[in-house]
Length: 196
Image (cartoon, rainbow, N blue to C red; front, side, top):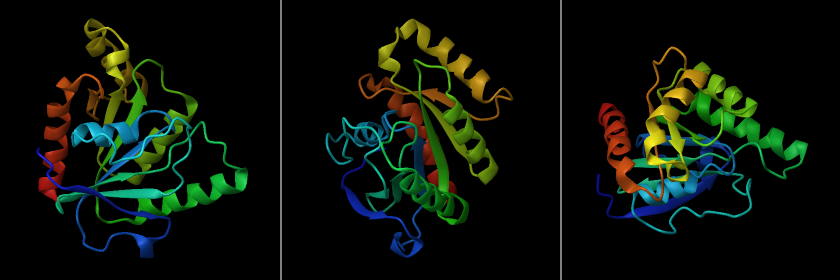
């Protein structure tokens, strides 16, 4: 898919701040340093649309990126490494829950995990949370450039067995450095946009 005019639209914490144009939403979920912003930038071939940060946990709002008025990439705050206070964590948790369980425009959740590491306890909690929402999900094993190309397929299968032993959720590799994985991810996303 070729995106010609992507733009950051709004950061939101309440439903009355969400975009009102009813476009399909592709939601990005993952721990704070897993590369959600880099994923957006790679997919649309831009360097700085989604702001990446060297300080994990900096995103504390829901960021909506408008893709040619055809759908949104929606970046949720990461978990795991944030320096937020307990009160801030509770507030963020509440607005994420409100969004995931009540937003009718969500077409697909992309759950990013780091291909180099076994899923953490937080990853497993988030995975179960996504499953309980009943929404379609794609597991994305990110940072595939950090391991040997010959090990990617085997590692993806291992991660899928750990998180999704039933094998009923697609798991794909991804890398911001090795662009070869983009087409498969776009094909998957496009099928969900078309259904919306």
